Length: 427
Image (tube, rainbow, N blue to C red; front, side, top):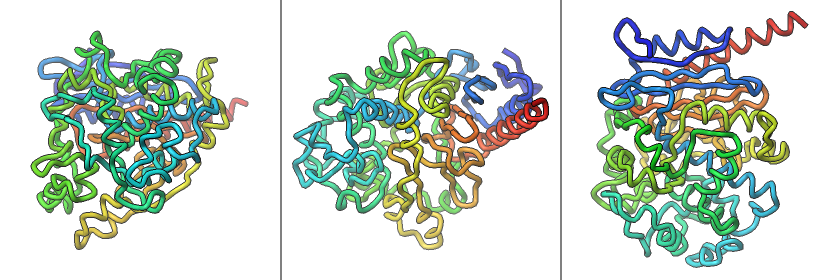
């Protein structure tokens, strides 16, 4: 491990021509706060950046083998499992979910299509009449049958397909159960066998015992990274997040006193929880694994001679099919923030299209067609098919600011552009 002049540990390397990314990474190590993180990238199917720094835990520097809890970036890995099943003709997004999961048809959900789940328009935001015994202390999260039964009994919060609202927890559970019904495997097992194993990824949905000590300790500083106007009125937001009657409260499993957002640090630092499969947000991975799996997407399904899916399914998955405001944000109805909270969100069938917040630049680089999935606290994984670029970024000190990752991605694109011009000049 090397250290900056201020004592921040860091390691990794870049290929020739991408030194500016490394310089930016080292200069910004203080952005990791109490924690640490990593940044990796592929260009044209080749690794060009693999950097890490900061602290994986108090007194322990972040090293090559350390994993980040990738939060909702996990949803992108779940979508890739669905892509494979669609590609094999085993999953049809235009069929009802109940075609694969008959019990799901109850409570006015017979018309919920797989497409509605994958675009967060199903309206099934959480549990109502049959809430499974999930404890913030860690019990019940690996009882996949009880979770599935609770969702099958739930009623949509709107007419399926008519509105978009981020299915913060249920996207992973719903898609995970669909994968299980079709394949006979849990989504974490399917991901390991069909994607992580063939591509040799350091990535899991349900972390194995032998990797638990490599998972970086989370520090929750999400509030301090929020834009100032939202930070000033955050108490009001917190109140609605705790209320199970609100859309956001249901999406984050509010119980009247707390919600997942308040419990994330304690919950996701527990080894018992990391071992369970929470396909909405407890995946663990290195940044290089995320960059590598999205390099496969950037190259239309094949990397290093290993074909995971067909070019056709990648192209279909890259197409933006919806751009709507998020009903969870509109739930707040806060004067002065209408423009910010009503900003439409672009979605493909399963992925997030290059997002931005307010006047910030896009989070997935300059190409508006870049797609992937981000995660709470700053996690990022995406690909850009046009430029054959993919990025993975993980951090353990959770923040709502994307300034550091945006600078790193900007430097990456600048270096890639210079290299392309140099190659063109040689030709």
